[in-house]
Image 1 (spheres, rainbow, N blue to C red):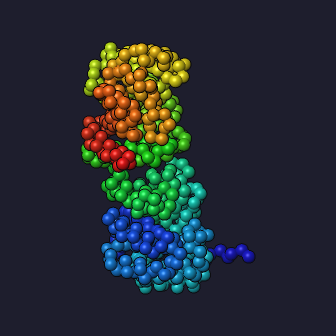
Image 2: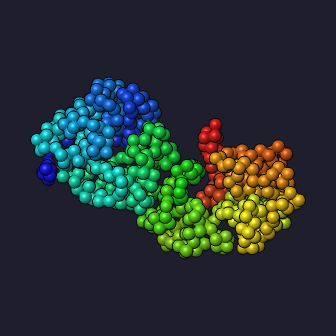
Image 3: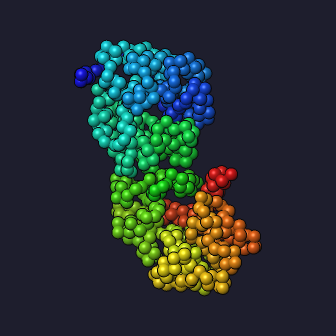
Length: 523
């Protein structure tokens, strides 16, 4: 039998007391009461605003006395209680009546906000909902009504209208981002609704990170975070510590310039750490976000409509973006690849290749490049920047590649020389540069050359994970000076910083934080 359409409802009730809301709400869940409370206790180091996902527990009602004790012991904590039913995307297997009883009990236990999904609100009888809201009013608890779409971002305005019929204290609309442009829809909704109500809006998924970080700037009451890595309650959630210490969420304001690093995959990129540290150090009001990008057109939509002040891009976007640029520097045009975009005052995109600086600057500190004999291993995207950049500096560049035809083609384009692999051991070079993935963590082949072929005065390995590659270890064992890939990564990032801000980059600090992060992951 089809369900009757819900009756629009409106209530006059005492306004809840003032709430202490920070911009970040830490979502806490667990398979047992001990796990939930343990995660909440740990999260106290970073937050005083929690969402307790009661539906993650086998018996939510039985947890309420422990929750009451926790909130009584931490009276500075603001808590949201959620008990979402399975048919609405949660884990609670109980009935609507049981859900309302759990949420009502959470209010009596000290939770200042309860989250009722809009489907449950619509399923309630008018008298049932009135009784529930009266119990919240008696407890001084606010009502948040939420909508979740776990598959896409569409119809957000209609979802908000469904919620607003119930006149809640908070309107929460959550979608799933399948593109970067989906963030724009969420942020627009927040901007529109925040004028008249307390609104929370997020796009779940890795592509939705932009909405999680920028929602408060758009007018959202708060955003959600996880208590720790591996403890996420929704796809794409990041930790509260990352939001505060990496993305500096609480310092973002309408004047903050937004940059991005775009690619796929991109989640483990060190560029956000590199640049956000530099922005903080030099007091530049800006942030850089990782942008999971499957299509250039999607990225360009975000650049135009957010807007973005600049973007660091990875392959294959380095070549695809060229027709969309208003201009590039001559070397970038010759290389045929651009890794850095800057949005001009005219709104147009300008392209640069800072990978060249990542190669040339470290070498210039150690030797005179004009006339130097340099052998480059590989003929891919990283090799192109090295070869073109070194030729421009007057070096004699030789390219050795597994597929010799590729080396010949690159040499012809860059006015360099190609060399067959069998001749490598018979020649002497001032510098050997590895641009191949050999030696990278997870790569089967450790060395790009045989030991007898290492006949250079200096060895430069572009691989930076691990910090000490097999090639660098071999070179050090022979007493040769080396340059690690981390130095290249920092140098190219420093050049990006200069292009975007017009200020000298704090290279020492950039190197320190990135090296520290890499050492943590490798220990």
